[in-house]
Length: 171
Image (tube, rainbow, N blue to C red):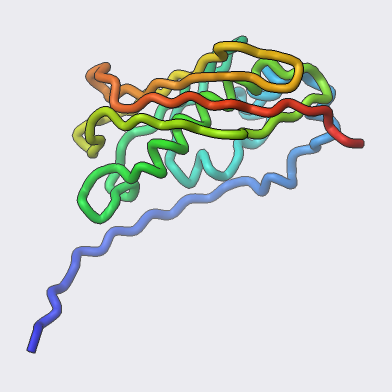
């Protein structure tokens, strides 16, 4: 007969603003950079995924975005490292938001693909993760972006490229 071992349990509580509270029509009157700057300044609510993951820093500028998040235990996979999906989400956020900064008023975008290369393990000892996304090329209908994720010591831990489709908002 096997005895079950008591496991230490942690908890985490967070809250977010419903995405429907932002006025999409008003946002679409701004260009993409102004939209993200409003989010960074707190005049527009951030998307819930930022609170879910524990993102602590978000700095947009034209063609570039920096996202910061401390590596935490609640990001772990069963083997004790930050889950690849969490890493991919950071890479996707930085790359796609870099494209977002290039949008004209009335334009939208969505990710078409994301190619990720994991270069080294990420754990809580990795500390503050910094992900920089930059636009490589912006066309009328698509944009190519890249993102690089570094640990607190500045070591590159993952890299990604992403294609985004750009299209007009439908009224």
